[in-house]
Picture 1 (tube, rainbow, N blue to C red):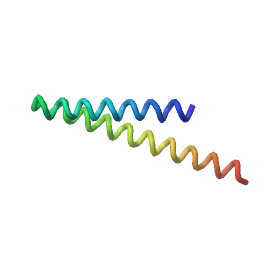
Picture 2: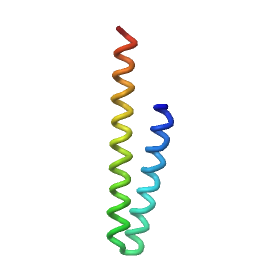
Picture 3: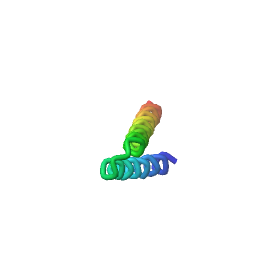
Picture 4: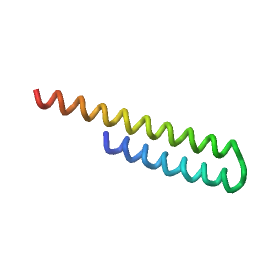
Amino acid sequence: MSKDNKAEATMKNIEGKAQEALGEITGDPQDKAEGKRKQAEAAAQHEIENVKEAVKQRIENR
């Protein structure tokens, strides 16, 4: 499940970067903002997955 969540976060990050770039090209501040928001969500999801993995490893190493 963790790898699936990381893959989803990576895809959301790529989508956000593309949307932000499109907003810069077209001059659409809403697209830029939405792209940045998606990237922030992706970064948060990656951090959540990293914490989950760290907790799992600590439990397994007891």
